[in-house]
Length: 285
Length: 353
Ligand SMILES: Nc1ncnc2c1ncn2[C@@H]1O[C@H](COP(=O)(O)OP(=O)(O)O)[C@@H](O)[C@H]1O
Ligand SMILES: [Mg+2]
Image (cartoon, rainbow over all chains, first blue to last red; front, top):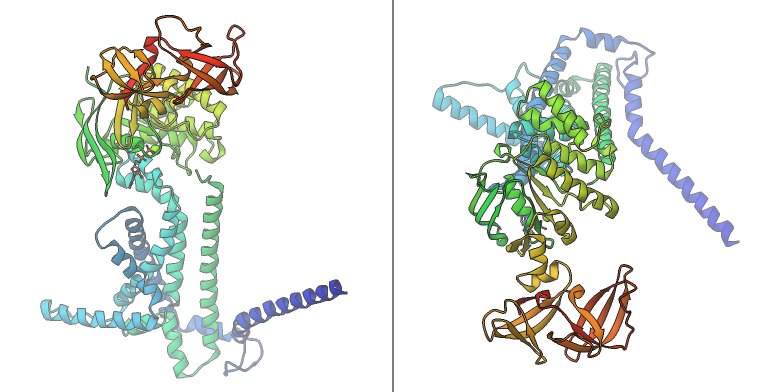
């Protein structure tokens, strides 16, 4: 009797759990599916189905302002990723391998961009640039305007934090005596880094790079504050389109961005998987 | 002859921990030297200072006459076999072994030849293209050895290289290492906490305790003439019989027995006689030879070890451990037997109480 009822209860629980999974998936992905579907809609109103068409993708191909924005986005992402990977890895190495004065403070400050809200970061960057430009103008008569450079610098600023966290995890898992062995075998600091440390932390560096690339491509808030005329990234441009009135062109642009982000996220997952696999294969000794 | 390694008042402090406390030590050229001591006594730190991986807090450290105190590790003519081997996981065995030569910009042809020789020396031919994680512990250990020896260092430093191996393999490797050292003629500085390993392999042993170098000598000297209770106790087992010095050649034990010894020390000093279990002779009560001190007691416990038998003999004032060989000619004792113990004059060492 009780066995039957407990089996029933278990069946119910299982059914409930399955329903939960379905609901979560619907909740997460229904908007994305809808967005993708409506990007092929022939109607001018983006929420209305007007028959299948590739017009919006064609329009995207013809729209030079969108293409400019994409190009700016890609350049910003590449430059900020390269610089933040170098600086973030260096910061991670400094924190894991050396002791120096103010290390704790540096450590805490490095995490700041991860925890503070985007808007705060954006205002901070804007203030910083305004002050810095004023000073440069006062002292050297240099007149600098916001634009590509300020976007890149801002993206580097938040990407360093993310890169260093990811790389640091990998360095922490690495056997420090490997570097000592390299030094013992006549390697200079630099060659020990190139031949031993870097290959060991490479999965972390790649993961950090992909993360930085994704974050840079996706950022709206910070970029909007520090962008100048003539330098607009894709997400910021899309945001401005919404204010002018929405057409399914936005849907098409979003789908393109989504696809790009997806590729990067999947890439970073694979990098991490390879990373873990290697760690499992290496004996702990 | 310039010593291979020479330390004077060499000291290493970590914050408030004194890991190595003013060590004076000369290690001779071509010597197999063992640094022996319990875990945490500063052996690894001493070795790491020689390697350049730790900078001394004070004192002088010379390698073949050159002061190396703050010289970085890559500029020292020494190589290390690390306790955990520290093989590069992303490189093949051949690349691991070749690493030091590549860093020294040795010509390619030389590298190939010497790497081949080194791999052959440690009998790993055919494994060149494997990764370290595809080898057994013993094989990894030999790769670490080859990776160090291929550079022909003036001094090879080994930090408990056999500790991770199981007993059979360890005994085999002890013999091999000793053999290898004779072949290559390089000075070996070998760190271990295993006294048998040190006794069986080393030409000379330095016993460390709590950051200090307590005694340096040949295995025989260390075993037969320990300078204090710590050394006597750490190297093998020993009975410590308390007493006072009566004159230069006599010690009076606590129970009043007078014992002839070779070097007693200052008259009136409180000392202990260190008496190895296998040096004590066990005889029937009052059947001890004339001219030797003897102690009467009762067998309180018998432990059979195969090659020998250990008796605990209870005296009125202490218990003494005696180890007898398991031979047909040696009579066996049972619990409760009344016995007398005696020893040759040169069987005891006088140590501070
Ligand atoms: N990097 C370090 N920082 C702080 N203390 C250390 C460090 N390395 C060693 N010590 C301390 O120094 C002492 C000697 O350590 P070690 O040389 O490793 O001993 P052994 O090799 O004989 O076991 C220990 O008390 C240890 O805790
Ligand atoms: Mg150690």
